Length: 241
Image (cartoon, rainbow, N blue to C red):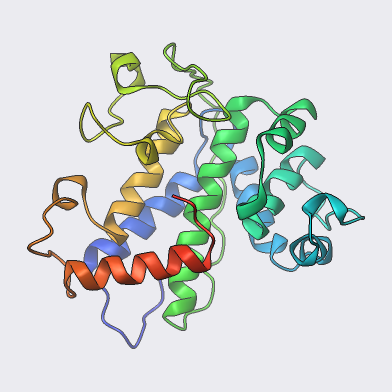
């Protein structure tokens, strides 16, 4: 990360370094090359005229046309990336099923969404600091692990989740506690994507053990200040959570 006029905590800089390295490495269902291509498509989506038309339309289904992709990924991958990046507040289960029907597996879907969340977080952080977007990393060679948690099942979401009680040792660590909320479970069908995302997210927000300590703060601002900012940003982004 380039230097900013604002002093950055060392753990933030280190978290971004780890996150970009994780994006460049082979994942669970995607190669390193494909993961970096996803990151490139995430940035490209923000300049897509069709996405702008979808966003402006009364219904996302009313917009006619095609996404202006970079030509590297499949049409299903481009649709998933562009809609999650540009109009996430109006996605639906029917739309999700249509993406899967175009040839994308559930694991690929979840892994791509995890990359979207990480890249958007880091790019928006850089934008807020007045920094340019970081050049995308060179992809690392290697094969995806293709590990699917045996406890993954469809219950409270559009795609399967791994409930804390269904996690097995082979999944690796996933949850801060046996009662982890559903926000922690969203990427659990791909445990490594879940770990990569939360390693970055908690550095920007708070580690799990500090979330319910409302009387104190480990950050430079107070907890009420943090939550007020978070609530306002969530509202502006139409985050129903």
